[in-house]
Image (cartoon, rainbow over all chains, first blue to last red; front, top):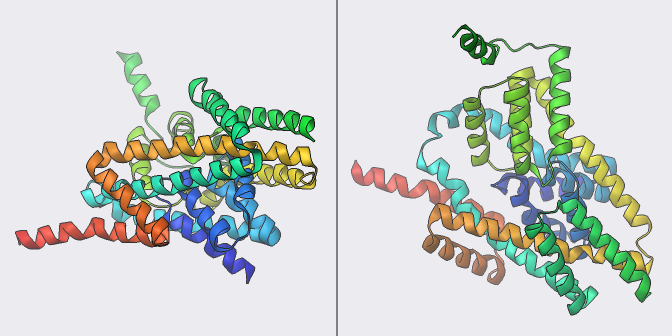
Length: 179
Length: 204
């Protein structure tokens, strides 16, 4: 049952992604690429790249698209629902209780202890993406692209959407020359 | 003095939320703007939420907003939808909640599907393949900076010793022993609540 799989694939990142949407990206990758094999790392990176260059919450954009590809319009809605609904319901229900205990160290500690795990998952993903890039584009091209985009993103502070557009432009031109 | 008082009075949020079509339209516009202008994912849209909910529409005070944000941060899931859902619910009930969610999520989700479908049509042409592959290293850089942000924040909040131990341990567990990250996160959350019970028991 594809809808059930889609639901699970986005429900788990939705309830475990402490630290907002970006924290759930490696968890989504774990399900979509690792567990269900719906996409390759390359395809996932394209989705992530487009998602990063568009406005709006990242996790819901990923969910809507991947759900749509795997299960059509209904799949898209199922994925969105699985991403959003659990945390919203939790938020509305627990608001009253948590308001009482918001200053207790336990509640404050949750995101603190989860953060290092997310850091590791992100680091592993970074490595996979870099490896994929070396395999498909070659070492030299990859290094040039990495240094170039690092400078544009972090030094020039150019908007990610523009950096992606520049990368697409560079890729198109060099691709046309090679092929 | 009179002017000062007047200003202060105007800044006080209205005690009774108006629940009507007008409010729903306000909610829709507010969260549509937040969704379309929040580049860089949900967390980067937080200042935009504050702009709309506190400054523009005065649905809540700065303090209420800070409380909501703090609580939303302690719960899992995307931050932007939690904020939209909660603020929408407070201002316009269940319909307000759904309205705020749809307005903040749908426009960009549709844009995403449209752009990626467009890419799929042309994906078998070699130079198009090369073009889309060129995005991968850029994403690697984005992920690397996110990794660093998370590590730095871990070190700042936990202390570097604990953070490094946790980072190494979770690396070993997820990559070496192939433990699902979800299980690891769940165990850590349990762990957060356990020690204090021991302490309380020791005190009692």
